[in-house]
Length: 332
Image (cartoon, rainbow, N blue to C red; front, side, top):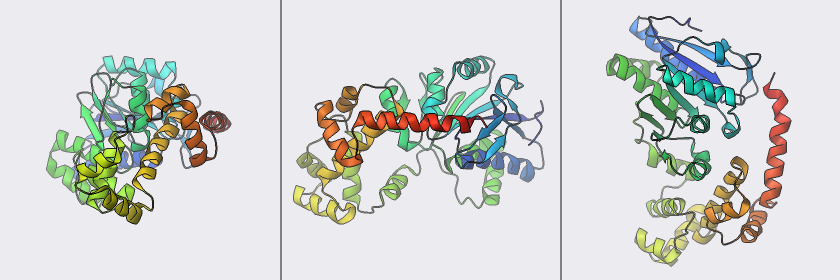
């Protein structure tokens, strides 16, 4: 830990139960290497917790934070770090504290699913923001008024958000470049064996193709059309025309690259969004059905049970019970 001093730009990392450790350590390493390479104490940092200061990370390791969030000194920057259940991590005390330090001049950001907390605090209103891709559908459905992008990170004035993982390295290097020059940022990147400082949108298409595991441009474009039109599904003949193929040719490509027909893949996309909404929101099932392009909750339940082995209400109840069983672990 670096002691916080008035002479440095300070970062506080609010560690919520179940946070992933990689982005936290990666961000701190960038700051530490900037001090090392620049031979000056540009940055200082600390970790923040709540309760007894001990937080269990996503990998099960217990972290003893440096101090409690509500007794922290003034920070230049505060980063909210959350994991797979970030939508459940906010509490009134944290939300009030975030609003207060924002008015006091602290820049506030979030890593991975920490964007849920910032949204609940009202700090993302009128701001561009991003979130981990797995939560994006539920996040957009819950906060339709927000400007949610697919970027790996976003900075909008004193608010910044990051999709998580190694994208945090690029965000932190961007801060170093803005504060102390691109030369220092590049030297830090070299120390990390990080070949290129990515811009927010630079890797968007590559990330999608890697995640899908496909290289065919026609299939990738068709999938993008599907993913952008889940509430009002586009007819397959229209998708085929938009990618410049016959429907039969598109069908053959899907079966070759994805092992299923376009119709089945599109259905699975809508069901994955439905599952995300079931788990991460309190929306009624009939609203989830409509948001995912199903005409009724019973029609959704039929396909949901076929895909996941249970109906949406059973999934929600099971997910809540699993979360409650984990709760005591978070407090140790």
